[in-house]
Length: 210
Ligand SMILES: CC(C)(COP(=O)(O)OP(=O)(O)OC[C@H]1O[C@@H](n2cnc3c(N)ncnc32)[C@H](O)[C@@H]1OP(=O)(O)O)[C@@H](O)C(=O)NCCC(=O)NCCS
Image (tube, rainbow, N blue to C red; front, side, top):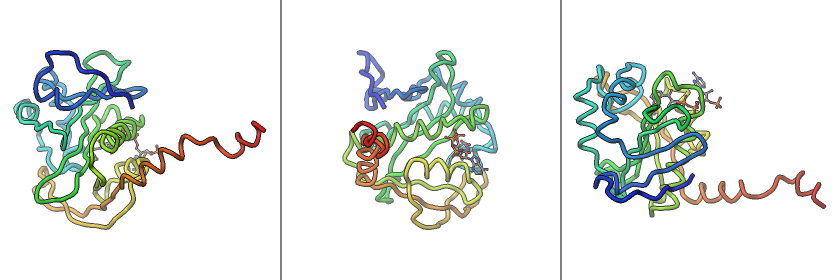
């Protein structure tokens, strides 16, 4: 994950969070000009039924309200995701982290537009957000949740090193109902250990070098 320097003159909400860059993605604060693309991708019951807060149908006015009321603080950030090689306006999804008082723990969230599923985008984006949280903030614990009927999301959390911590119920706005979820957690010290592990050579490579 690379943190890109912000140009002078970015909007206030944007200036609170950096632009992150991965191999294939740019992650930045959602802007007014993203509203049509956000509405087009998010207006999907398959996404709404798996997330807590997205309405369905998802209208332009919902996208506008979402972008205009975002609270970007050092403690909470939302990133719009763009594929680098598919044109400047190629929004592919949304992700972020934040804390919903009185909950003590920061939670991550994400959705990817259906045409872009199955390409590793959620995993790549969430790894960048996790690296950002643990390297640039003092947050020590991240939580995530996936509906028990959402193995794809569960897999994303596992690929990001989250560990299962229990079950619970989560209110889904689009269903006007609470549904069972699996809960997951990732501690800073686990993340730090995995990052250090990744930088050591595999034993076979080390043996060959001698
Ligand atoms: C879940 C979601 C974020 C995944 O996005 P994505 O970019 O396709 O995810 P990735 O490609 O990074 O990883 C998906 C993983 O789940 C696996 N997967 C997908 N569907 C699966 C299924 N039905 N059963 C088992 N595994 C499944 C994929 O094979 C992949 O794992 P792998 O790399 O080990 O093969 C996306 O489908 C989405 O936005 N869904 C609707 C909203 C949502 O669920 N948000 C999360 C709320 S908790």
